[in-house]
Amino acid sequence: MAERMLMKGNEALAEAAIRAGCRFYAGYPITPQSEVPEYMSRRMPEVGGVFIQAESEVATVNMLYGAGGAGARVMTSSSSPGISLMQEGISYMAGAEVPGVFVNMMRGGPGLGDISPSQGDYFQATKGGGHGDYRLIVLAPGSIQEMVELMQDAFDLADKYRNPVMVVGDGMLGQMMEPVTMPPMRDLSTLPAKPWATTGAAGRKKNIINSLELDPYVLEKHVQSLKAKFDQMQATEQRHDTYLIDDAEIVVVAYGTVSRVARSAIDAVRGEGIKAGLFRPITLWPWPEVALARVVESGRVKAFLVAEMSTGQMIEDVRLTVSGRVPVHFYGRYAGVVPTPKELAGVIQNLQAQLK
Amino acid sequence: MAEPVMEVVARPPESMEDVPLHYCPGCTHGIIHRLVAEVIDELGIREKTIGVASVGCSVLNYNYFKTDFQQAAHGRAPAVATGIKRVHPDKIVFTYQGDGDLASIGTAEIVHAAMRGEKITVIFVNNAVYGMTSGQMAPTTLVGQKTTTSPRGRSVEGQGYPIRMSEMLATLQTPAYIARVAVTDPGKVHRAKLAIRKAFRTQLEGKAFSLVEIISTCPVNWGMTPNEAIAWANQNMLAYYPLGEIKVPPEVS
Image (cartoon, rainbow over all chains, first blue to last red):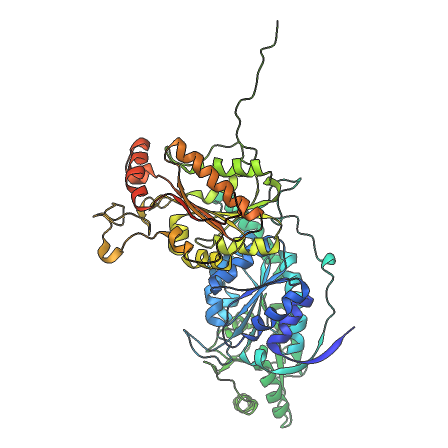
């Protein structure tokens, strides 16, 4: 039965993970996501799961590698500097095909930066982050309800592809409260079997979780098989959402918190007769290029406006898809500053004036 | 004509794969692998044991043991083992780590796994150098010992005295069993096996963290013959790293 409750983003995603069958959480405190480990420390023992406060983010990701390799649904959460420390382990998990879910409540950087909302880790999440040739499915919710739903998908996708999945939010999504409807608790016996996991070689050949292969020709074959998975993700997992886009001449491209600011800005300028709409990527990787290309090919769009809480990262993917057919403009606030709807409406108005 | 009567008087442990090991001539990893495998056989736990390989000369040891295995990033084997053991508390989980892995890059993970009292067994092979990368100085390199990154010999000024991991970990209250043994003569090999068995039994009985440090040799990187290396280890390593049980739970016999 669906339950409607008012929850803080960080707590909602933690409960959503447990409902999705997560029974292993390791993490390290860092603002603005410390409510996640706090919630998990209370909740995991109630469902027979494991909570560990690790000694570092480096240890955290390797605990996930062990527990995920042993067959559990595993997750951690952190914020930008902590996610940087996990990159080596994420690469190992991708190489050894260990599923796991990572939540990054992004904060302003670089370096220690600040603790305010940011989208400065787009490149890190979508273009590698760790070493070697791998990809992550990166999910970017725009509301707490969507975050709860995407947490279910994150665990399913991680298991389906035997690959880590990242969910990116920011300090705003983590800290604010919204009403949410929680999905029911998953029956663990219905989750996919993991015959590859390290469970003790009783009556079967031994299982090995490993990313090492010293023969480059053999490793090349392994990486080819990883690539086949990434190709399949690109072909089948692109997701996006739109708002008032059917007649739009100016299309704002924004995800997460900024997409909400953009909706308010679009509502405001629509009142003045400006035909503005929103294209919101939900998967940052695979990049929703098919849908965005269709918007370009409609011929109606006179300009794109990419709005990010960064100095311009996602804009590179927008430009690749638009491929010079329509001008692509940029508006960014960064280092923890969130643009206001009024501010963004002003940018759209200026753009409209240039188009005339 | 009567068939010749054949009797098996010795055989490799069931828990070891029948494949050649890649280790250098005179290396003691082979002895230690065999001791671990014999203990797993004798305790009858092969089908419930999960090993964790580390980075170093023993990185490929998942090819040599006939148990489930996970290969860990450099230094992180205790964290990986923590994840496995917490998911499968009824299984036996061990790590196999060298001194570069455990005593340098992995100090945080080993200290905190020991502090939490993770019910895992750590096989810690100390040969005082980085073997796989061809003989650089380790935190365990003896004062005065020449390596490729301490060509004038390790000096106390700037490099300090070597780290005694077992004694340091034994200052923690939680660990159950910590011992230092060597495989540098047959009597010591026998005592090493007894310690390894005790460490695995500690885990089987549900007690906290157990670790066996094993003083080992690296003839190739020490620039010695195997016999010279054994003699050097007995004379110099054991003087700095005394053998014996450092922390023992009274109930484990």
